[in-house]
Image (cartoon, helix red, strand yellow):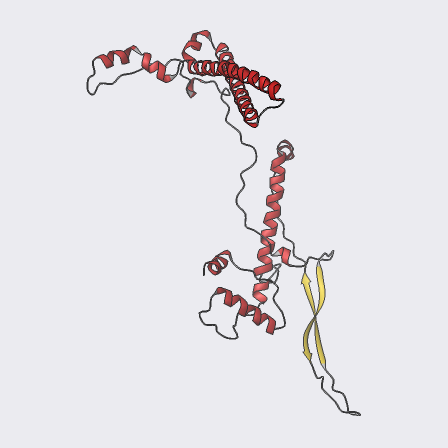
Length: 303
């Protein structure tokens, strides 16, 4: 506390000195204005600089006075027997200890000195609830994978437990150039009826109404986790579902194996993507996007 008082004295002295200089400079500026009718740019700059420094010193003085006031109030609220020792730092108590003075007068090798520390506050001497743990806002949730496959597919709605649809299974194209008055050829189209059951993806958490009412953020976190869990399983089913039981029939199990039409010299990952696009194009299913594992994409970027 004495150190803060010393700083305050220095700041106060600086303010008094700055006040005298500022007043003197202001008088010179007034004389200059009366004499020439206006102030020079140099005088304006000097006055502005002194005013800024003066204001900064005033703010520093206010801050120090407020800090000293808070410290004095804190010490005043302590028991009188402990107040004197609390304001002393540990270093001050060590320096003023009689044992240290005796030790410094006759230094002996291997000797140990014990310095009593007054008014020490330890956890065993504090009643329960006096020192409360700091509580940080929010919930530190687990990391989550980015999910975007669902966004690449056009959504639809249904109120039925199953969807019936028709799939074209074949087309024999007999179109040809024919002469006049001759029989036109017939083409064939084959269809098949398909049925796809609606699959339910669900899960639940157990939570009492009281905890959800008392902790609103917990409710929003549970909602977010439940939605993420559904989207994660949905993405796995869209990509890798084997179609058995209630599982979806995913994209990967239905896809044809990669078969490049030709080889490229020093072929790399980006070449594989382009050849896969060619394979899809030749099958009349032009690819509109690629789905890659993060490791595969990193290999392409670093190649």
